[in-house]
Image 1 (cartoon, one colour):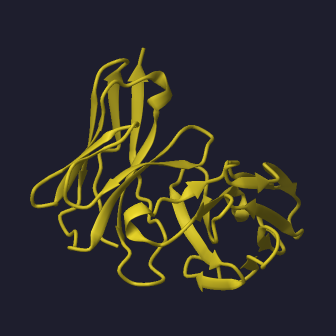
Image 2 (cartoon, helix red, strand yellow):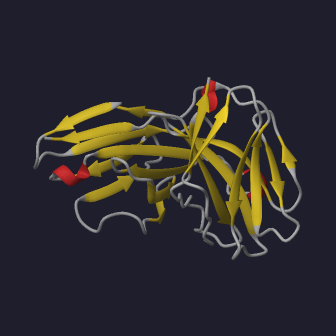
Length: 116
Length: 113
């Protein structure tokens, strides 16, 4: 059973370009989360999605950032008009259910975005 | 989610047990105690979780104080591969929409060969 897959693993963008980060959850998982880790900082929650729905986007910057998890295909985190401060590692996690007794999140290897 | 307090760093010798403490004095009755770890240049990895009773799995043990205000993650025999940042996280899943993980600064564990 393949784990959470993220691509690309490394992404370099110039200021003002768009960045698209993809996440394929584990088989059978319908909940996806995105987290961001700035250099030398901890992980911060960005957004929680279920298929075709955004459940919690309390950690998403108000501008330039958007996320989707369509009925078919991977979840996409999109950053428009990137700035140097967007340089970070972006991690995706997935889970099967929100049942408390077995509710671990499985993380992907991350996408390291560098804005030049 | 209630706050947790962990030491910034710890060191341990290889093949010895490691006890990683976590204080959570404001824990509520519906908070589960979760532990994750992040190895260098990797995504976080689930380790263990519990509510009131001590828990064991193939990776570690979790000892929870009787008043639940603190807990300890126990690695029974540390290896070099256990060098990571360990996060203690409280999760209250009683309300829909509360599923996110709130990471603190964690404890950076160094294993000495």
